[in-house]
Image (cartoon, rainbow, N blue to C red; front, side, top):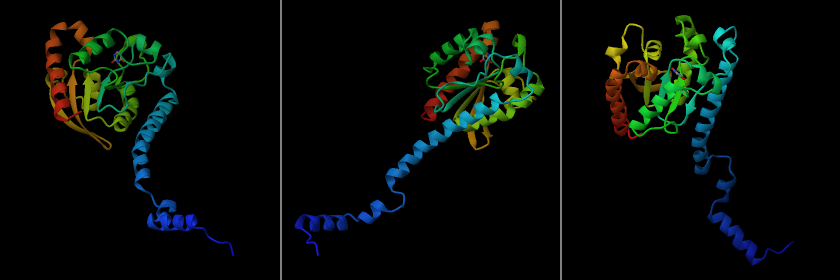
Length: 233
Ligand code: URA
């Protein structure tokens, strides 16, 4: 029989002491539990990819047929603040990104005024393909895209949801309200598993046409800033 040397005996004792069975067992240990939290963002990433794919595979949609690119989103998918506009315009269609035209320049300034930027928030639109001549999307088009934007909100799971303009407001809150009365108020809403605080404010394109309303938008922006502090975002 082969002799066991002192070194091997010490090693066996060491393994006994540290309960090596645990190390080789199939049971999850804390290290793997930590990996679980990475998995969450993995699943967010794959959910977003799947959502984008289903939008790209949409059939018999005139908006999609007439558009150059899908406009899915911009910003940080991990952000707890999500902004939703109406639909892409010509610049957005060209670049495949939301709010990159003149309205986007104003949106960036609005964000900056409360110390936000695109890396700190997430942006999308109710409709992901440019309507011809930048017309307002029809009720039917909005209805068709509703499951996608609600799923989008659910995946991002924001704590604060900012609706820019009446199209986003009517689609996600209801048709029986007017923006001049509904803006600047917090509304608790649930989208699937996502419970969020919603605020409606004027669309930057509207503010370019009606600059006198910027003072109201500033009130809304300060409410967003304060809520961000309150929720420790
Ligand atoms: N207006 C919108 O509502 N969305 C955009 O992406 C650009 C302009």
